[in-house]
Amino acid sequence: MVLVLIPIIVSLIPFFIYNGLIGKKNEVSNALGGLDAQLKQRYDLIPNLVSSVKQYMKHESKTLEKIVELRTQCLKLDIPLEEKQELNKEISKSISGLLVQVENYPELKANHSFIKLQDTLLSVEESIAAARRFYNSAVTDYNNALEMFPSNVLAKWMKLQRKEVFTIPETERANVNVENLFEEKAS
Amino acid sequence: MKGSVEEKISNVFETKIRPTILLLETDRKKVQKKLLLVLGLTSVLFLILGLSIPALGGLLLPSGPFILMFQYKLIIHGFRLEFKKLVVREVFSVLVPGSIYAPQGSISENTFRESSLRSTQFNKFLGEDLVKGQIGGLEVEFSELTVSEVRKKNDGKKEETSVFKGLFFSFSLKNDLKQSTLLLNDPYERHLGKGITRFLQKHSAPAGHEIVNLESGDFEKRYAVYSNDQIRARVLLKPSVISNLTEFGKRNTNRIDLSIRDKKLYVALSSQRDHFEPRLFGEVISLSDVREIFHLINLIHELQEELELSEAS
Image 1 (cartoon, rainbow over the protein chains, first blue to last red):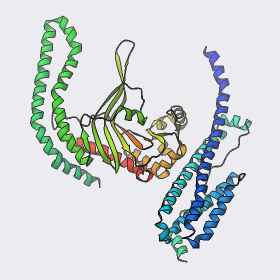
Image 2 (spheres, chains in turn green, orange):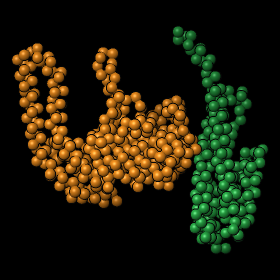
Image 3 (tube, rainbow over the protein chains, first blue to last red):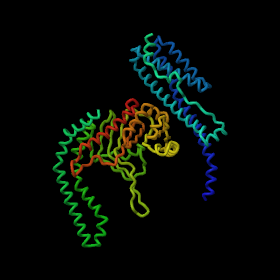
């Protein structure tokens, strides 16, 4: 009985590996879909943000225009993933810079609708960060399966390609020198 | 800091709890004497009957321990209640200010099942020492629970498997976190390695949940996280929270499992001891007993802080 079962089990192994690889590939797509859903939420908030702040923050009109422009580019349908990632990083940077500048506009700071919008934006930013972490986890699992034996054998035959995780640029990895920041602000 | 906390507990024990212990001292001695007399006489009677009528001895031998246990419970029943009403109530009034204590109350079976922290295959559910109040600004109710599954074996004997024993907490969160996430104590990765453990974890996920793989190896060696929403689970378990929980796990040896189901946080703190029972020989409750109870409540408070629930909720 055992002699019959062993070859059956061994012959099923490639099927399990194949299914595992497909499952991991789909998990990456699922994670990307989740990230897109969070980013869409942010895009939907941007018009509200712009209309709320523009009457108060007249000196920040360039930042607001930049955010609108970046949003328009992100909404294009066939934009490559790497480019979209860069654009979204720029949006995050611009929005967080804008929210810091709000400190200089006490009327806006006290506006109830703006406070609610700000809370929603911060919540969406947290969700985007969480969605990126999920994507990275799914990609890591997938890449491991592509490189580890024996699944790498089947992965090569299936022509599966390695994917890149979301990273931060080298410049952002360096420790922040607080003194320099103060000097930059003073100058 | 630790020194001053210890001093505070000692001070509270001497000023607030010791007076209640002294109130019970006379009753304790009476119950002690009664217990020794009744159990002693019953044992002697069984011995005499067993020796003089051998046929009766065959019946008394297996039933003797149960009869003695029944007598013991009957004799101390009133004293137990008195102890809980006077001493345990005072302990909780100090450790959980403003709380309401019900000695015979319990977390409901439904609440325990809803937490998904343990198997729902149980048929014996005992709870007592219910406390309702606030810990860390959140409404909470908790009690001691002993949950088990009793099965009949092929030979007709009963077999009892423990499902949970310890303190069980149910917190009401201020906001709906819109997820079902379980954080379970899982030390197997340290012994079995990552590959095997991940395979086992993936295939033992509760229905509707998936394993959530997080970035910290240290954290993964202590906990297994399951959730019905991979993104919301990571919003809750952000890097700072993961780091806090890892440190928390290193500091404490008690097994703690928790789950978040929408607006509820459930915490299961395993403990083999009954923390709120009186001693009949010696002090009904000692300073080290009170310190242990304080430590357990404080653990839960720390856990809340590590989860940064005041920000999340």
